Length: 463
Image 1 (cartoon, rainbow, N blue to C red):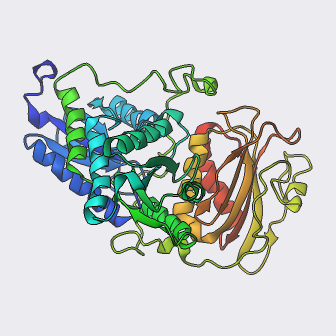
Image 2 (cartoon, helix red, strand yellow; image 1 turned 60 degrees about the vertical axis):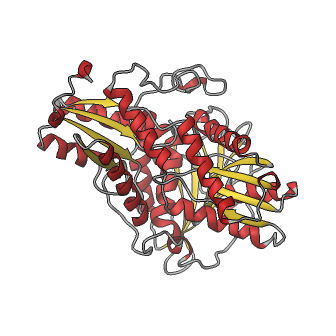
Image 3 (cartoon, rainbow, N blue to C red; image 1 turned 90 degrees about the vertical axis):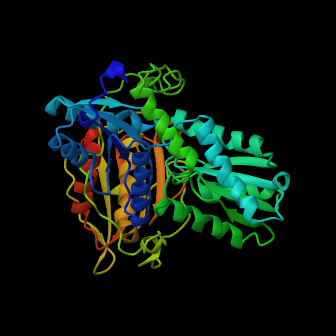
């Protein structure tokens, strides 16, 4: 502590940086976690801020600390693994604030994988057996559900957590699925594991807090359970403020306070720093935030009281036309009429919007320049969370910076998105990104402005 001259505790503060959620329970749980950390550090001021969807924002929290004459801030990302938020969004925001205000901000590590986090996960799964005395570990299959990211390092860490739990407890089998962005997704993943013959399947959302995604995981697993009545599906609780989780936050803070010299993220398999196979194009990419335009919006959901009940995802669901299964095998990835609308000079995009009724719209958005998967996935997630009930369908083909020459095919209905599919090559010479929407009460111009705000960080040129 002497090395950083932290004896003047009234000039030093701890900032816990969260992702943010529209769900009130998730925000309450985050506040409770911060309170636990404050109890561990009674001589320091502990504040919190969110990257998006909730208040206070990280900048709001930093402004508060600045007004209190804080000179040094220890910022800890409340994230399980180091993906885009930890590696780009939060540090970019912190660096910009520090350069403008002169406040020293020391950025800590993500929670990551250590004995404490493995123990926290194992305790959540062990709770299932305490509550169900007839269950035997060796006869049970564990499915760990990760958040999902475009960062392979973060995704692989979820798989490692799964394996450590399986071997630590002595479970019969373990599988890993994801709630979004990558694959396998929850529902198709569970449809595969039911074939393994286990009569007990434990579904464990490896998330810090409650929210829309945790509720969605339960609902999707319940759908699979309906078609498999002979299998018992048991839901383990997410991590929340489990004591070992709090201990890990303390460990991250102590790494900075004690100047231990090991406050570094893993660079050996980071796609931005190592020449990782398949991700060579991303080495040295510019560090920038994709969330500055939604920071501090505070768009909490009023349908849940307090835990997310999925009401925002099931309200206003009505049958839509052409709800056929998606074709992701080749050139038929978009309806013919929408493709036909773009077989002309792409410098002039003035087609009429197809109208299906007084408030049903069908239209296509296009842009020329490739985008990052992280920015595109984040934009879809934000759209799903805020407008999902009014997005009857979105499907399209995406030109990404991550894998040049290999288009990404995406398809979703309201809040549910199917596994993304990479095509080996473009079906024709047109490499524009095209997204076809069917919406209720949302005009083309609204979504055009929405995606411009998100994708501008990837230098996309919208038409």
